[in-house]
Length: 238
Ligand SMILES: *[C@@H]1O[C@H](CO)[C@@H](O)[C@H](O)[C@H]1NC(C)=O
Ligand SMILES: *[C@@H]1O[C@H](CO)[C@@H](O)[C@H](O)[C@H]1NC(C)=O
Ligand SMILES: *[C@@H]1O[C@H](CO)[C@@H](O)[C@H](O)[C@H]1NC(C)=O
Ligand SMILES: *[C@@H]1O[C@H](CO)[C@@H](O)[C@H](O)[C@H]1NC(C)=O
Ligand SMILES: *[C@@H]1O[C@H](CO)[C@@H](O)[C@H](O)[C@H]1NC(C)=O
Image (cartoon, rainbow, N blue to C red; front, side, top):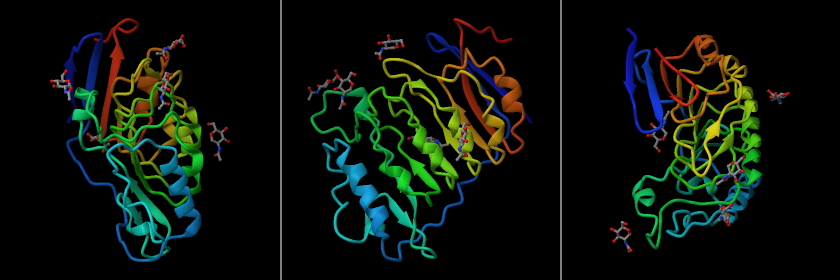
């Protein structure tokens, strides 16, 4: 069954295709046993050092065993860090930017130390504040990622086509990043390389230069949920 929902919020026409209602949670090993691998610990500490953390959300990030730190999970088989969940659950930060201690982590630019975490399967940075910088290309080196959530994280600019290297991705959420400037995609030729992708959210990503978006999306054999917006300045749908 294909459901088509059209909404018109402000400047954009939001086209929301729910190809299937089936939902499943991403398959992620979650186990807290095993000691932390020191190079991965160092990578987390460098990442933490690059962030502003006014509310002290990462205060547990100290000591030897990084597998016990908040938001961090290691594989109980290999000891490698496989999950990093830094989602900011307090969306009021956006509604009240004058709060003295916002829960969002913020950074001028994301530290590339995360590229050390080569066994990462799950990365959620949603609702934090990357201050209008673009989504870093080095994320595309995390080739074991199954789940990548960069929703509402104040990215802007061009979304790197190198994301097409993340061939194991099942969930990709790039939605609601238009802080200062929109985030945009020039072409989507990389998208069909994500053959395991089942859930793709590009709401409010500017696809007006990606004229082939429909064909590219159509080439994803595993896709179940698709969300995207078409900016009405350039596009006329229906
Ligand atoms: C922050 O701004 C909101 C809305 O503008 C206002 O209601 C609230 O009182 C302000 N809070 C502080 C601490 O200034
Ligand atoms: C965020 O970006 C603005 C404008 O580019 C800049 O002035 C500011 O210093 C940046 N903030 C951080 C934390 O890097
Ligand atoms: C990404 O995170 C946001 C909240 O931070 C959530 O609403 C959304 O469902 C997530 N996307 C996926 C694909 O899980
Ligand atoms: C990643 O993608 C880029 C552009 O799509 C490609 O040129 C590059 O060879 C890829 N790198 C790896 C390691 O697959
Ligand atoms: C948005 O992008 C334009 C063109 O690339 C640039 O001139 C402008 O400074 C950017 N605005 C912000 C807020 O980053």
